[in-house]
Amino acid sequence: MSIQGTIILKDVQLYWPFLTKKNELAGKYTVDISALTKEHIKAISNLGLDERVRTKDDDRGMFMTCKSNFPPKVMDKSKGLVDGSIVGNGTTADVKVQAYDGKYPGLFAGIAAIKVKELVEYNSNGDDFDDDSSSDDELFDDDME
Image (cartoon, rainbow, N blue to C red; front, top):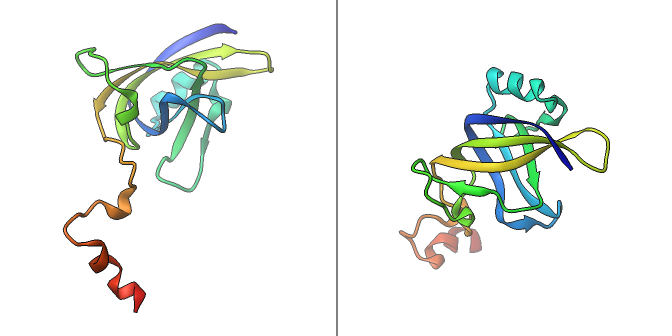
């Protein structure tokens, strides 16, 4: 693997971050970088990674998946280390992306470092059960009758 270039994408949003353990499907540390602007797309294209940008019908809009064999350095605005396991979907960050070539043809997007600007903490319970104001019985009463 050799690095072909590096860019920093500022004020992007992170989705599906696997920053402290490998994504089982990819076998690598991964993160989707979204909220890509025209300037981001131009920088990505200049780096030769324009084929890596795609979109699906979800909240990410235009996004790019970045991967690494090693856990990326995750820090806060003061450059203090952040536990990557608490970084959740929608976190705003600056991301250092490296274009690299590997054993397969083409360039790939790698994660070098992440500076968290606005943390959205990962919630392992999902969004459906965030409200603790009612008991489990009250939550399901209407559905169970």
